[in-house]
Amino acid sequence: MSQPTEEPILRFFNAAHLPEPLRTVSQPFGELALLVVATCPRNAERSVALRKLLEAKDAAVRAVLP
Image (cartoon, rainbow, N blue to C red; front, side):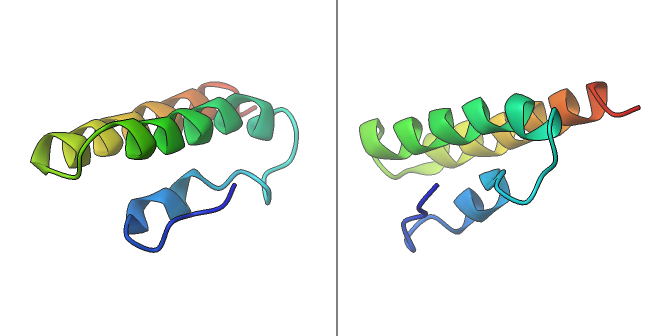
């Protein structure tokens, strides 16, 4: 996943370093984060959306941990 430098939070959506099945769970959140950045104007609400998406990604990854 490439990350535009203007949105630093995207670095937390990188799943390449994760083992399976964590990567499988994490990767769609990164794709959605890129879509949010591409389709929503940069403002406070976009930042909130990305932050909550990151929280959801973290919870989903924790849900599949042994």
